[in-house]
Length: 382
Image 1 (spheres, rainbow, N blue to C red):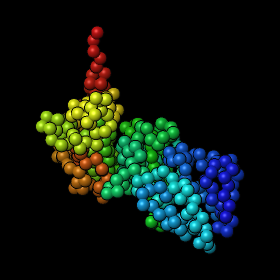
Image 2: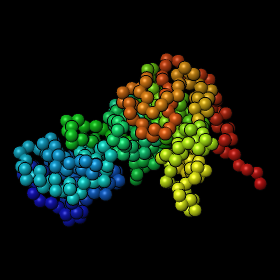
Image 3: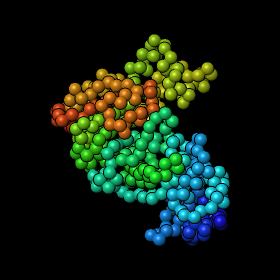
Image 4: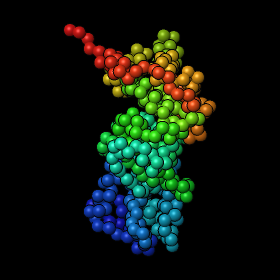
């Protein structure tokens, strides 16, 4: 077994005994940099296999907590090669121990391949069909890598949308990879992500083409008008029997805690992010409330919702039927497709389920009135 360390240390695993082909140093370096950028990972082991039908590149990762590098090496070699030796397993394991990768969460124990990127334009419907998209995760950030052990976060059939992720991608671009977990090497999932404006993409999708839309801690970052328009589009693209699942910071719960002094604010996930320099004992309740409104990219266009204000926006603004929307609770699976069960992980949130019925949208607020709203354009007079 030989290792090419000419340009990058610990990236290329080559073995004639496994029918693994060589490649030029420049191509190896280029491929590594490309995928390194795509995943925002400092280092991974790159394996290049040469088959009769061409070459394939696999990036192995053993960076997840409790991941067994030896199990990853053995599963990979068993799946993709024939006649490997125990010595090969040992050497590949050693490479993974030196460079386990930095993708943690529940998807840092396997390998990825088949990386693709392309601009979507107005071809959203074609992309959705090609990738067999059934679910949208709007404002997903990188939750497909990082999520709690007790949650469930499937990626097959999902399209993850975020205005800032993946890093180094271009606005309007989709990135996709195939991911295989070492514990179940017979199953490969396709991870598809889109960087750009969610509403613009969803407007290109076919009506009644999805089973569900999921969004967690996203809509508080955008204007109420954007939320109303999004609700209309989500209702349009979700088929009858499907669902829209929403989790957002619960304004009522935060303010009730501030007034009554219970332990909700003290246990907030926002605590520790921001405090005044004189607050040596931790942030005050007032600081936590200000943090909620001023930081986390909430201040520019965002809006903090309680259930009654959201319900009014959904029913009277977007035209959602009143009997389709209800207040829910953390990981409530009622009326949700199985793919959404246990997906959320922000248990301090306000949870809302909208069940897609066969009713048409009501009139709601006209787009012209949304455009003329002075909520997000008001300026103080001199």
